[in-house]
Amino acid sequence: MLSPYGLDIIESCLTCKMRSDRIFCDLPTTALQSFEAIKYATAYPKGAVLFVEGQAPRGIFVLCKGRVKLSICSTDGKTLILKIAEPGEVLGLSATVSGKPYELTAETIDPCQVNFVKREDFLRFLKDNSEACFKVAEQLSEKYNNACHEVRSLGLSHSASEKLAKLLLEWSSKNGEAAKQEPRVKLALTHEEIAQMIGTSRETVTRLFADLKKRQIVQAKGSTLVIRNKIALKALATNS
Amino acid sequence: MESATQQSCLDCALRPDRVFCDLPDNVLAALDAMKSKIVCPRGTVLFREGQPAKGVFVLCEGRARLSVCSESGKRLTLHIAAPGEVLGLSAALSGGPYEVSAELLDNAQVAMVKRKDLLAFLREHREACLHVVDLLSQDLHIAYDRVRSVGLGRTRRPRTSSV
Image (cartoon, rainbow over all chains, first blue to last red):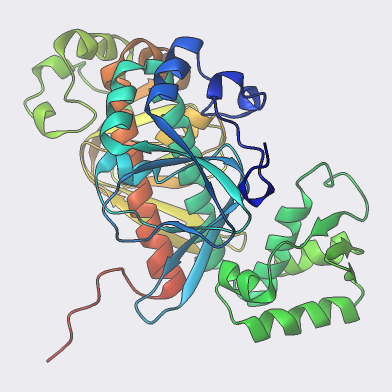
């Protein structure tokens, strides 16, 4: 059947081939069966907002396919992107558990499949399934690590060039590129979005990229960035 | 650091007010059996950012400063932990290094639980695991608030306008 937005919707978690690779989904069959009974499989187009910072928590969103941008916003409209969530992540978790408003805004940047679970159902599910409870603790720990990393990067980096160099090195360490002498980074974000990730302006990001290219530290090949001089980029990242 | 008289958590009058410690007697007895209580003077560093996580520290009395540090040694306070909080929880659960440093701001009493013991305890006692999930959610809210104030220069609640 042709699915919306070209997504191949996985209807049942029990038959999902990806679940063994995903922290939250890799549950014993009994727990997965109870999860199956309370979840709603939904599909969203690119640019859909799953929840907004400050909203009362409705429940959790398990990201099955696609990517989601997690951001916070100031009252004057300044946006800071905290993370690009990848498939397997559970979104809205801490707000749903604590009952406090969502701390972040979640917006899809690809067509996504999301499994939604209502707050009351999810809390009951956690009480009944110790394995799921443990996995939620693991996911929350990972999110906490990420938030600490973000505080460190935003609060202790001296300059925008240091922050951009750190971000590029972080991206280049994924997908088995780390060991390569000239790692490649697929730039999935616009300069504006990169600026929102490192807390600077779009103009600064464009200027920094131009400078990196001029100094032959990076080279652009379409939307892929080749890191030509990893040592120079590392020196920029450590501000030395 | 010196070992304190092993006061039992079961006799602690403060436990109903504390998220982690408010456990049924049988669960608390299991926690009691694996914890080691230590008295530490002000200024003691319980753990440093980057160290492999050995375990968690339940702050029974006293406060601790949680901070992150840059390569150049610049320090940023993330949170001042109050009695009842559990320090090093996320690192102990994820198995990675501690993400923050914890330094005592007062003379304190701390109950230390080794990582291996904690994981086994949480797997066995669902109530404790639920409390840990609650604590981690609170920690995460605090961390996001800090990201907001550091990255956007203000808190979510608008500051009251000065008259």
